[in-house]
Image 1 (cartoon, rainbow, N blue to C red):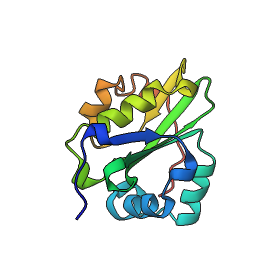
Image 2 (spheres, rainbow, N blue to C red; image 1 turned 135 degrees about the vertical axis):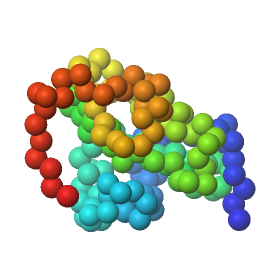
Image 3 (cartoon, rainbow, N blue to C red; image 1 turned 180 degrees about the vertical axis):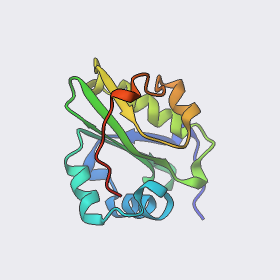
Image 4 (cartoon, rainbow, N blue to C red; image 1 turned 60 degrees about the vertical axis):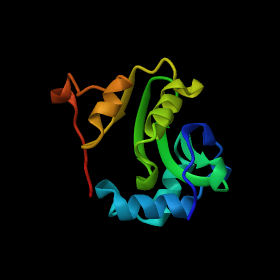
Length: 146
């Protein structure tokens, strides 16, 4: 069994070559209600076409991937945060806060007019980083395909 590290043993990287895409896809697909219908092909395309991707890695566990997030953005006015997770066995160690701080501080995501996410979970965590319910929700429209 791999020894759990501490937050100091963990690092965040936006280097796409470090991503374990198969692991991330299977974790999302198997554990997240919002990813059940996602195919690996669509997941790969989502990675390729996202402005920034974030991997969370444990140095003590051979650079094992512990979490993930990606941001779809024009890097000027709008961004959408999605596919955020920390592996269950590593939750409760502050890693989600570390990941979110990395997202919020990323240089390409500064000065945005609107930064969105859609979630039913962890609303308290996201609120700590400024995410609030839409004040103008009546103005938003969507095409949603499950």
